Image 1: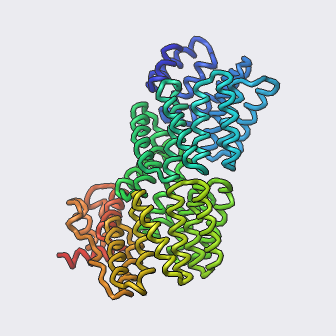
Image 2 (image 1 turned 30 degrees about the horizontal axis):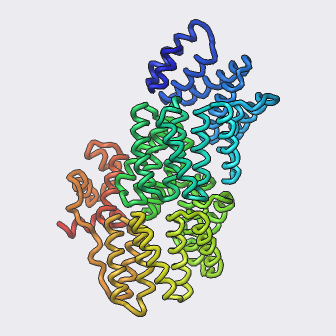
Image 3 (image 1 turned 135 degrees about the vertical axis):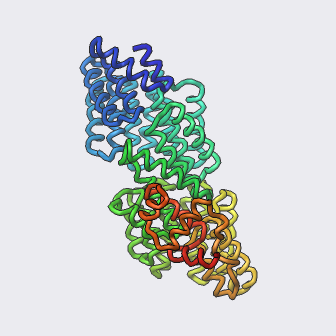
Length: 535
């Protein structure tokens, strides 16, 4: 048992499994069953790991070891929740609560409060449960519970108040690094709370720093399920900061990991990849990714962006309104939906409704102090002002949005702000407007953002200016990509390309996708035409 516990702390999962299995041969004990369950989960045997810990709960409860039983029940509840089994998750949480009935404050009550925070729909409710857990942890001397609850409170606070939330998250991380957390899964959860909060609030530098730490942590401890989640979050950072090819690799890793270990938690990664495909102009690919995921919250924004791109803004409005009903007091999540809702409303000709949504964004920016929210609010205000022919106001808001997105190192959004500025300046300063649009077009070309590049090219045509050339040129292609491009010009499908080059069809598809992006073309026909014209 001692060897198994030490192996768990060191992340030596196979050794831990062997030790606990040997201990169980000498007779059942809840500790051995519990340790075996954790080792199995980290080895990637997710279902077996959950089943073992469910059995450990029964043994702890039978022995009236309420703290241990509640801690295990909460973990089981969370695993069912992330696996999409909400009813089972609620049932396990209820079992933990019933076990603690009539028992005074103990660490078990704190673990239940933490899980209540994770189940809560409203940020204020999350924060209240997390504060309760912190109080119990400090009263009972439960260090790991306190650190975890601090990270939960910080994540909740970050959604509404940037500064206070970040202080709490960093306090939790310092405490964890100081050795107050020895259990790997508690430390992993605290790490995840930090990077999710940083990413959603646009704190890219902090998010990148912690993503690297967590990625290293997941590799060192061979925590396969955690590695998939980390890669998905890191991909969001890479997409926002313009490193799209790296983001695709991270998402591929995340989706492969999720598919093998916990398929149900892959929705955010799928939604991120779908958004990227929309920006690349690959709408059919985005549609395929999102098929059947209409009710997953992460997919609502991606679906709405797809419908806007397809010139179906009325559908986008409904999707975004549906998503907003679940955000309540979460400023970050609301912002992610309100910003495209403004554009969808304007596309529908609903200027006053768009203005109301833009004002909601501005209020969220004021209340939260989150720089990303403020930047999106200014861009939304610029779009509304431009639609209302208030060009001076539109130009002023666009300049502020451009400055904010530039500071945040978000090239796509900065380009969108620059393009809005060009539209506002077109009447009085057409030469300056053309220069702004040309600069935006170049940024979009570098990213491979074909839809945005098309809008920039349209504005430049209206101004009587050129785009500076669309294709990036075959010189950017690797040797393998040039081989694939030659086969595309022969009319080969992905399956035929794969057979010819002795690679998988999936790999062939990846090569084709990268070729389209690098050449700045929409489809295989345009790629073939470009190849022929370039000799």
